[in-house]
Each structure stands twice: as C-alpha cells, then as structure tokens.
Length: 285
Ligand SMILES: Nc1ncnc2c1ncn2[C@@H]1O[C@H](COP(=O)(O)OP(=O)(O)O)[C@@H](O)[C@H]1O
Ligand SMILES: [Mg+2]
Image 1 (cartoon, rainbow, N blue to C red):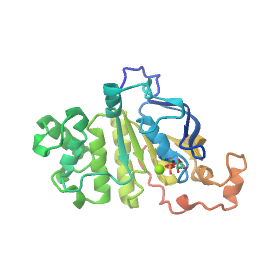
Image 2: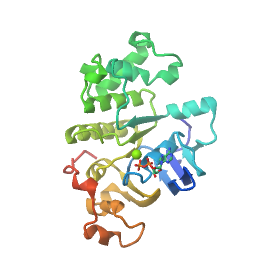
Image 3: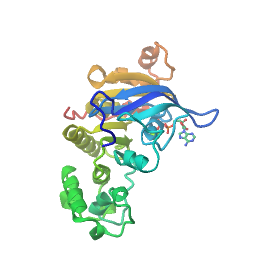
C-alpha cells in the first residue's frame, strides 16, 4: 500500500493536469478526475486522444506540465528515491503486447515482477525465495494457468500470455492496476477471458483498475465508469450502467466538445472501433 489514507481519499486523483509534449503537441488538456478505490474505470477515445499519456502520469512515467497527480493522497510528483520505488510497487501495469520474457517459464516471468522488492539481478527461477515462487504459483492459479507454470512463455497463446502478465503485475500486491489496451492484440474470446479475470480480481482484492480499451462493448461490460477522451480532454464521464453504446460512440465523433455530437453520430460519422466490436460479452458485474 502506498499510503494509509482513509477511504474518502481517491485512489487516483488528477487535478488540472495538462501535459504539453512540445509547443504544438498537447497530450492532456486540463484533466481533473477522481477515481475511487476498488473501482474499474475504462478510458475510451480515438488513437492519439491521450489514453496512454494519462495512464503514464499515474505512475510518473510522465510528469505533468502543470497540475498534480495524487495516488492515495500522495502527490506522485513530490516523491523521490525509495518513496518513488514504493509508489511504483503499489501500481501494477499491463500492456497490449504483454512484455514477457519469451524464453523463460510463465512462473519465472511472474516471479520477476518481484524484482524491485528483491533488489537483485534475475538469476533463474530457483534463486527466488520459495515464498515468492509460492505466491507466483497462487497468482497463476488465480488467472487459470497453474498447469502452465513451467511452460515457456513464448509457447503460450496471446490470452495466456496476458494472463501471465497480469499475474506478474499482481505479485507486488499493487492497490492500483493500470492497463494500456490489454486486449487489443487478442481475439474476442481471449479478450473476454482477460477482462473477466481482471474484473474478478478487482472485486476480490478491491483493486482499482484504470485501463484503456478500444472496444466500447467491452468497456460497457467491464467498467464501473467510462471516461471518454478526445484531444486530451475529458468529453464523457459516466457510470457504465447509465451509458449505452450509441452514446459512448459520441466520444469518437469528429466534432470537438459541441452539444451536436449526437447529430454527427446519427449522420454516420465513421465509427471504426465499435463497427468491429464483438457482441457485448456480458461479463459479470
Ligand atoms: N513521448 C511523446 N512525445 C511527444 N508526443 C507524444 C508523446 N507521447 C504521446 N504524444 C502525443 O500525445 C498525444 C496523445 O497520445 P497517446 O496518449 O499515446 O494517445 P492514445 O493512447 O489515446 O492513442 C498524441 O498527439 C501523441 O502523438
Ligand atoms: Mg495509447
């Protein structure tokens, strides 16, 4: 845990965050957002709308040009050294392309997520303390892969590799999990599996999950809340229960922040993402 903050403190707070990469490139434009502990929030938006940039501000891979990012009440911009390491340990991350080491086992990949805590080079599975190996096995079991523990990671399917990557992110026992397009490389069935596993673990562990997705239907099936980004701004922020796919599509419309977006959607502005979205997967809430 990052901070012994009370329950009223949001897990993640962005306070007027602006990120300007260059004078001409604005990544985030005055974003304020509070995300409660244990909730699952999905970021939707076109490519280039700022989803990855936002995620990368939470664990300080990016620093804001102005504004502040707080995780459990701690301003991530103010921590240094050991505090920064502790902060990052409390925030897991998974990516579109899994980022596993291919020629080692699933179990060793999961153990390697503990590297920060071990503070040493990776020197093979048997050099990890048995408690770490046991924990890693438990996590593989939680993602349904206990029987694959000793299989070379690059022989696993994409969905299985992403499940290993989730287990690896969880070995640090984070309170926040960031996921950047975690199912963008997966087929619909594997995507639903991965999102279902994330939902279950989020509920069981009260894990706050902030993830970007391309598919509205998955977002509606997975999220408690959907935040739509366009050109670095929040253009929609709704409970998933109150939202239908058609209205969520407005995030992708060409107009910027006008009240006429619904008209442009109705008029058939290209909607490349939802047009290819699979049927609503009906994930358990
Ligand atoms: N490291 C960077 N340097 C310069 N511009 C960047 C950098 N990262 C992202 N951007 C720009 O910021 C904007 C948002 O990008 P990004 O967050 O990657 O969008 P998304 O993840 O929604 O596709 C884009 O215009 C992108 O080109
Ligand atoms: Mg991105």
